[in-house]
Length: 112
Image 1 (cartoon, rainbow, N blue to C red):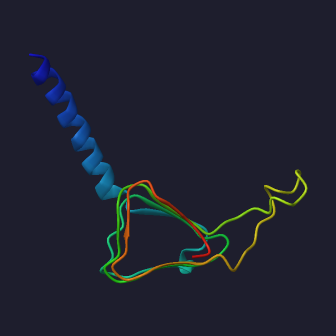
Image 2: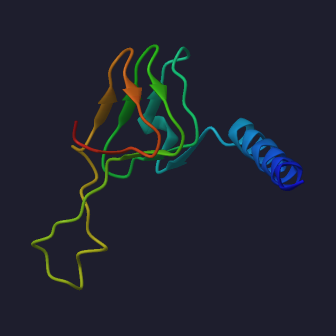
């Protein structure tokens, strides 16, 4: 009886997850022109933060769920009141090479 109860609940959760997966491929924070994803790459639930550089995902790269690619950075040596507001606008690019696999819940910090 418990198996049936939990299996039914689990089935609904999986169904919701699949729908979210199909609807939510990537979110881009910043200029979308700074993002280049090859048509053969597989991206799932990814955040592309491009305020401080560009992101390129090359052919046949593939992502697990909930990957974050972050080009932003803050100067830890800056005064406390300006640390959150000031960040570089270039130079923190990220390139995901051909065939690379980025595991679920990974965070990639540029430049790399």
